[in-house]
Image 1: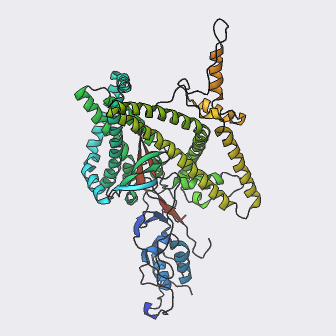
Image 2: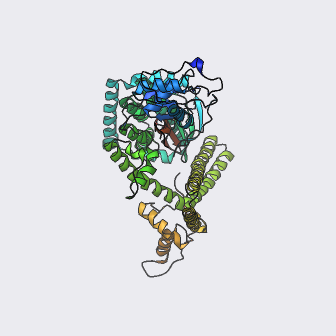
Image 3: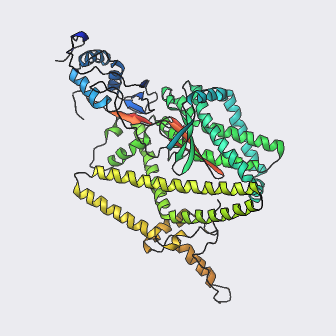
Length: 575
């Protein structure tokens, strides 16, 4: 029987004792509310689970969750929710929404009243191996301390001073001597590395302070591994409570604090005249540019997400790509977006997907060169460190050991990233070709072809020759190396032949002995129902910052956990 708005369900005391347990919110559920500045035609509402996962729900599902307090059965919920939304609902409608939509997402308890067991989402290109270092209470205190830096007059003054400092440094003073003195004094590596790490941590404080300034509470701060680099992160998931402007401030808070580091460093130089200090300014500019890239989960990704009002951009890649096939109907995850947002996100996909694929191919083809160069450089650093320790020079020895670690971490990160990509890709392909033998055979054949191509790139001994001083590493050379993989002669064919031509040619026509191309000549510096509803899941909003070698890079992970990846949104939509 369908309940009308003025109908009254039976009292809860009249329920059969053996009936289903009334649904209630799962433990730790936080109802955030409507997603402000949304790019959806119908703005979703957000819910955060105890594990930090943020869920996007339709208004109907969110209303059911709001009213599920454990005291109302399905009939009572149908009456109350129906009044809220102005529609007639039945107990079966509510049962379906609870058991098939909300319970699987971990928002409400199951039919037996038990807490739901759910798997946390594993977003694409998210921060891995996260370890919290600073508790939420301390993060809030730190954010409150630096919060005044976001008052408008201070922001204007800081940005104006930044422009003036850049004009002075790059237009008048120059950076040549900063680079020269740093190169000629290797002992400066340790303090410079420490400064880069500290600035990466300060970047994360910027996200926390901006989040606090907007009225939200930053979460834990810690470190993890993003792609191939160590990274710091700040959980700013609570920023989902804020409007678009405040979320954008949170996204840009880390870069803003990088600007403050630049000004402090220039001030220290003006006070001391110590040129190598200016090298940190150069590194900060590289870090700022890197953070603003919208390709992976860095601050730039979250800026695009908050500008468009679509917190799960990577989840839209598949639907948008499939929707470009002329005979396929557009996916609901695309049609729910506003027209201008759909165009903007499509443009983002058309830029990001080719870039990610290109970068993946480049890494796969040139991995042997990277490994060979790292091994060669590591061996030299080890020799130098051993000699330094032998002569009692502890500073140089420790510097050498630290540089070996700096070399090893990104290489290990690259390997772990590739293993994960192939593992996830294999699982996805196997699941989506189940019951489709033709597609599965084609997928297996494509996988075999990929393995064969990688063997051609990885097996030749010459492929592991360290990168040579004269190699430029341009995009054109990278593309040519990919083309030459099929020859089975490795990825250094062109540079080897160029060396041979130079060695065998002379101005008087004589032939000299060719150099051994395999030798190491150097290394680089280091569903259907009467009330249909959908949901989508996002991850944590994390901003992470990577610090490696003499450079610091920031990366981001899902939901407002700012990974110098600035508070990206890890959200789960009832998608």
